[in-house]
Length: 136
Image (cartoon, rainbow, N blue to C red; front, side, top):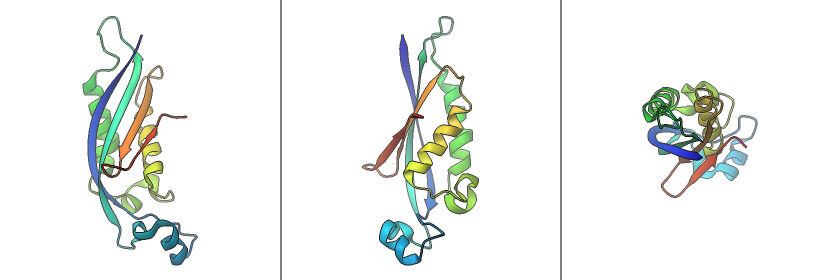
């Protein structure tokens, strides 16, 4: 019997969407105001959902405190109040779109989970714009 346990979290971060190998005009055409050279910020919301079998001894799929601590270390401490392009190593050469951010977050959290657990991460860039990734 598979059960999914979810934890919500949030972080605030700035970013700029652009490609170094494109002209300013092309970046502006593709990314619009998200190409602002002075960056712009979002109040990101995230939901990490872990799916697995219920442990017969503990009754848990995963202890929510463990999930909370993984999210704090791997996401909140790493991204909160940061300029993703400048201060976060994973985005030095990777455009910090919501799609790329959710994959990076997934990989960071997944690496800390037991291999038998499945993960899906949903990242809200705004209340109406969000992306999900489950490793597929």
